[in-house]
Length: 291
Image 1 (cartoon, rainbow, N blue to C red):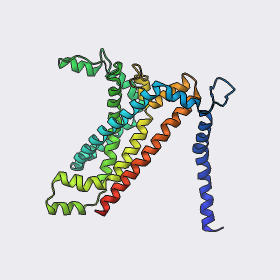
Image 2 (cartoon, rainbow, N blue to C red):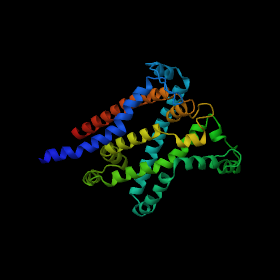
Image 3 (cartoon, helix red, strand yellow):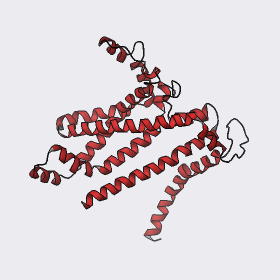
Image 4 (spheres, rainbow, N blue to C red):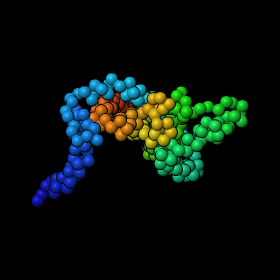
């Protein structure tokens, strides 16, 4: 047996595992999405595209899509800005970095369900500590997760607290891995700190930023635990995310066919968006290299 044949033989188990845990569920979900699939009933007749049409006619689906889109844009923007600013500050403070790096792991290790319950206590309307301090300052307490206007903001505050340390850690690692020669040249040329950041650091960090944006966008799309514990998508549908919508559709209303259809309606545009974003970042990186 040649080395190439041995290498191919070692790849086959990986392909088999991939087929079992990825490809088969995808094919099965397509089959479910075109059937009237209720797990309480044995018969699952073929209905074609009726599940997709029913989902697209459902206002709750568009509300959940809009809410998730707002979360992706707003949460990502705050996390990227805060993460970069704190990473740049830690880059200049070696002693502070050694103390802060272990502490950054704490929010990420807390389970989202626990964070949801902590949020219910911290933002409790009548006796929560946040409203208590607002009252001490002479301000009126807010309804936070009990308000249609603030429920999504409350969820994002908790999620930003949990995930900004991840962004900080990735950006800090990227900054520490950058070569020193361009910075030495910029210092000799008398470049300002802003010019160094926007013309040297940020272009070289483009792959890191791309990775963070994709990973965080995909994780935000899966937002479920905190929302389920804190608001259950309410009041009304003010904090209904796509993951929670599909969960309720399948496991509260037992319409698994529409659940699969909704999942595909979510996944296909997201895949196209991620592909487009990666290509835009790659083009920008190539353009920076040619300049």
